[in-house]
Image (cartoon, rainbow over all chains, first blue to last red; front, top):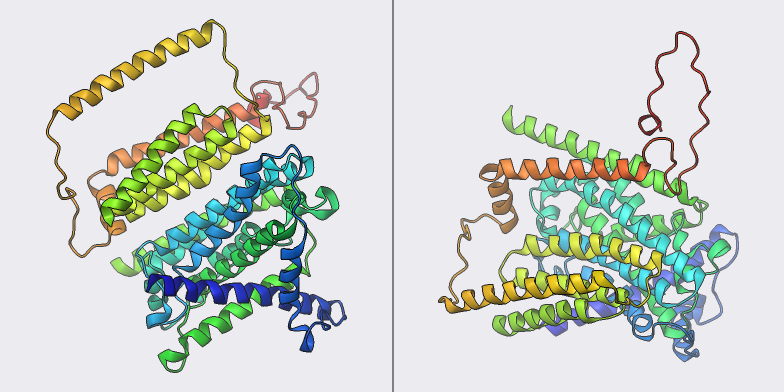
Length: 317
Length: 197
């Protein structure tokens, strides 16, 4: 039964990642007034399959002075925490919720904080200065933005009164929390972009200055795993954002439509991620740190204070 | 099943903790410490302390060890080499502390220990997190608040140290603007550099 559930998560997620890359390339194409991939299969729909096949067949290469074990370990660490997060996401009511543990949100935060290791270790073990710089940048960036992200979820927790993601969805049956917590939602989305190293926060792999950042020395499917991990992180963090702020699977219509509502909201958020990537230029490093520590963190803290005061006043008045 | 998991996590914690101090490469040592923390989190989960287990991963494995690794990588520490009088002294202190721990362990094992129910688990319909919060904010409110004060002091201290004292600029920071040699008449005494920068 557990194995079945695991398969039920992993396969669709892998498919989603594959077609998210396709969708991203198609969207960029349209934004650039191009066609995007359209050669492999009808409408280019087989392009991601061809890409994966190509990645598997590429030659493996390892730098001579690399730390062999850690070099091999880093790509795995990029994928595993991202996959674990999906186990607690309530995709829909009833059986579509794979597991419901009472610290679901904390599990998500824990896994996203473990994701730093992949990039840091990849950068260090490659024995390449660009990779090392990318890894250092990324650990500083992710540790900084993790705080603001954690704090931005507290407002939702105060309102829902539970750490279980299913309970949080139930708490927004009537009105999604984004209505009450717009500031927290904005902070969460910005920090989500930074946590997943997406543009405009993709400093760890800023190609103009760092070649390719932490994955400069990676080739073949090891590079593919980093790619996979990044896209899975984008999907998982969007899933959590949908659950926390956009009402999860709740929506008009019968409960069986829950998964559909969830996927619609998820799709909208993923589109937003891609849209931002091809709209904004990359931040400078000091701007990134200033935004994280001097804008987002105080905003998230102020949001907690205001939310707590309002809830307290509503209970005691 | 639970026993098997407990033995597994316990063994992982012990072995990785040993490797932290036995391995020569500082980065590998730090990584084994991460494994030790994660195994501890697993043990917390088995004891139904879900909140503590997750916080263990978030705080220790996710934040503190990342900063450790960051420093180790940034300084590019190589293999640690030993030698000199300081090492001899450190080794002697190590043996002394080790002997004390061994005596303590012997005393503990001499007593009677039995696997029993986890004591003090308030199973009153409250979730684990809620129960913990309620205990923290009622019975242990004072120590809890004192802890936050201590953390605040540590934070201020860290900022003061990193800013540097007097006119010496902190490493990495841009040099402070040159102060005019004399104060204008009627001007108040200039604050010390450390406070103004």
